[in-house]
Length: 114
Length: 120
Image 1 (cartoon, rainbow over the protein chains, first blue to last red):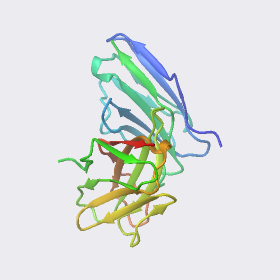
Image 2: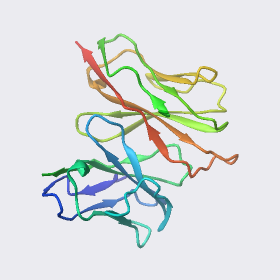
Image 3: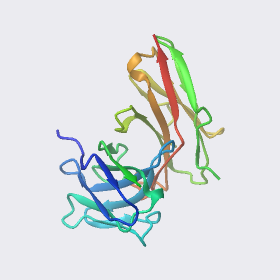
Image 4: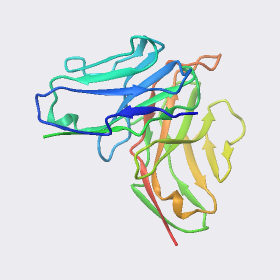
């Protein structure tokens, strides 16, 4: 089966610009996660969707970050405006359901903000 | 307080030897899950092994085993017969807030990671 797809793989922008990342989870997976991984740290959950509803966005900086999963399948994560500290790898993951043990991760998008 | 602590920034092991990666956790929940993930230089996170807090037996998956000591709140990963391809970053993670049915809305919290280098 196809894995979690993410695009783009790399993005370089200047601060105050906007950027969007796309994720397509494994077919049939109801739960989708966006994580931020800053260099040298473990991933941190930004937002979790169950189908097209938000389950947890407590660590999402809502003044600049937004995410949607309108049809309960693919998802976009947007940053507007970007700051230098947003430089990180943004990982998308999916699981069959919220309680599933396994989360399957995509290859990530490496964002550099200059 | 850190929920997940990995005290070894880096570990070295000789090929074919066993290695233990340490992980301690902090939670007041009775029901929780512990995970180990591998992240090679390509960046993708690969699920390795899972241990539920109520599981009586230590989890095993091929060359991976989880040494779960609940009273000490530790969940160390043991890799037997190390291979060169095991060189990667390893993350311990915890999911809290599991309900009795095993489903959860608790988020996954990761540690800082341990870089494992396997020497030939």
